[in-house]
Length: 251
Length: 282
Image (cartoon, rainbow over all chains, first blue to last red):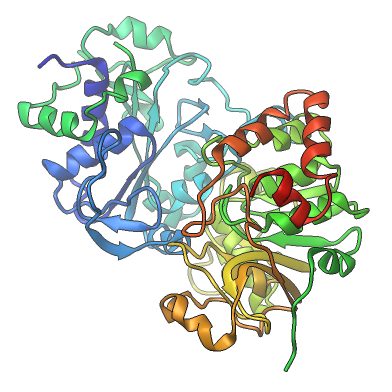
């Protein structure tokens, strides 16, 4: 079975949730959805996951192909989701249109708040998520347009901003990993600056550095993102038999 | 016994320009679209619209009804960005208050409980608090002394919601999996008008689903409008799904003024909900 770039991304996502135990893993997007489910079906069996809507389901909902009956564990309408987030029992993976070196994220709009050049999603839940639960990010197209010196507006808050807030926020704010089509980043650089954690096979460190609009921290020898195990590849194929993940990240 | 049944036009007659109107539903799901279209066709203007927004806000922006929008997002779900709302934003034609989804919830709750704000950490350090002077912080009076966001009450003048079933007295019930924040939207306004897919006798209402789904009591409502397919083209399962083809046509009409004029002539200027249903083939 050949391993595609998308499969390495899936594993990068899955690894974000390692050690999380019995909390809600809430990865948003196609590859994130597969990655979270792979984590639960292999090394984090206690993760709680949604069906993408208002139910918590015990079985994995595939992202393509036939959908099995859901094994419903609990009802989780939008209002309950805020109870989960504000109690800290969740690790969300969001997207970003822009991100700076300290993880300040923007997917709301670009330009003047009164008349933006580009209106995007709006704030959604990003301000609250980043202050109240663990957050990771998924960036399917790593480029200097996404990783910028300064974001236009801050929707999800980064480490420098969290550091200026109260003790409680400093203690609870955690941005885990940023998984992209080129590699995996974490906030292990000086003052929690973004650092290359691994590159996907076929990607050089120079490539990921030059695809980033600020100075990405490179700390010694950068390993390759680990390959999925045979068992994990079987799970990936079962969850995405039509290979829609490869449309999100082509080889 | 009060009979609260009325028409869309009766509801519009209760509204006035400059009002703050809260709209229930979420994105392109269970929106009171027959009421929204009635407003879009009316002479009302300078409205402030507060919503987990979708085509409700988009349509009212496209028809020039909106002075200010209060929202955490504006999305058609299957089409992530609402194109009519984008046009309004990118032309600078609407004032805005950008809120986090949770801050919006707290704002509704504060209004419903008649307190000026609810403390939270949501928004700290972000654009929501740092660059919008309307959103203020408060210092905890307890030993922790923490600075918190004072999520302001979203005091509505009127709320509009859409439920699956209701009775003539204004009780309402949802039949899909998520009530969204509709009961809070209803409670955040002194006057709430509810459209329903079907009005049924009160003694039959509880037979449609679990009592937990009877989320809207007549304490909350001032009028009920029977509007079959009243949420069209947004999702209203189990009665009907989102009309994706129709939604695509609506979204495409944002591309240029001629397309919009044609859409508006066909689906808005045609008349009330009954005429709309005929034109849309519902």
